[in-house]
Length: 104
Image (cartoon, rainbow, N blue to C red; front, side, top):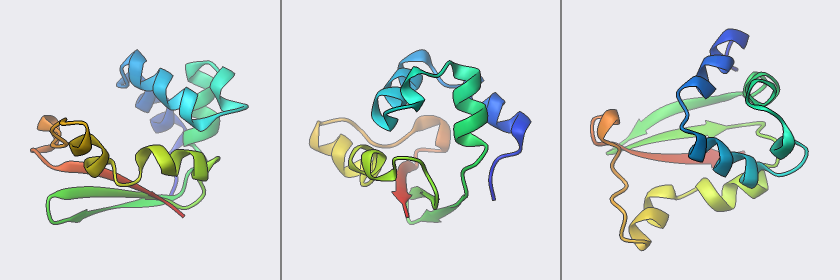
């Protein structure tokens, strides 16, 4: 199930500019040159996926993410990547759970 159009626009309202910039750089062309409204409307609106909780981790799986192979190398096993850089992977505003992504 993709996000409703208005919800996809709301997603970017809550993303700090540094997160938005990082996503643009990682998703690659043509998305990296789009403005926030275009990115939210045309990238997030078409995504299908699901969210599950496994142990202490929220796992977000996307089934049709554009440039999934590029995103996979940056976001899959995110808790492990953060721990390898001595960063606590627990997200305080997600009740201390970790956040991980899958791209299929």
